[in-house]
Length: 253
Image (cartoon, rainbow, N blue to C red; front, side, top):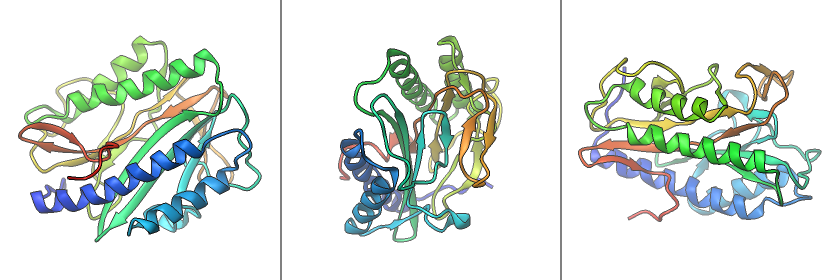
């Protein structure tokens, strides 16, 4: 069942989302060669707590960290480590969630470490663009798969593939709620979008094939062919005025 949120509930989700957005901005500025993903995790946790929130991922189904830090061929759910030192030319996906007053916010960005190859730059650009293509379709009266189709079309027309084993999701009082939101599919399918839906859209895009594996840590998802992968995510609310990005970098009203 898709839970519709009241305006008051959306306002609370937005506070959690702004904590996520502000923390991601700090993390983005902290990414550089020589930094470990464990250091980024500690920065993330300190910032969320400073802003009055709680880390949403830490302890969720026994995930051991605040931040998902996924480097190069890691797609999502990378576990931060003192041994994982970022190098010039790497790319890293930073996926973060926060809880505030019982409501969740969730977002992700992918950034380069120092100077990166043009192919990596293009992968990041197309993945971020595909997120906004999906958001454009998140309006009252459209079907859920209109979002999915827009993402898939932009990604595949650029020569990349979407990950099919992991999807976006509804969000609110729980980190993961209905509906699931694939990044592929035919348009005009699934439930109609309504005011009060709050969704976390999150394209995961591979430079090579779409197939993925999960490492022995039972969390880290990697591309099966070893190609690069990028990930972007926003939490949005569907309103009568169109989709509102709750995790935009703009400060809360």
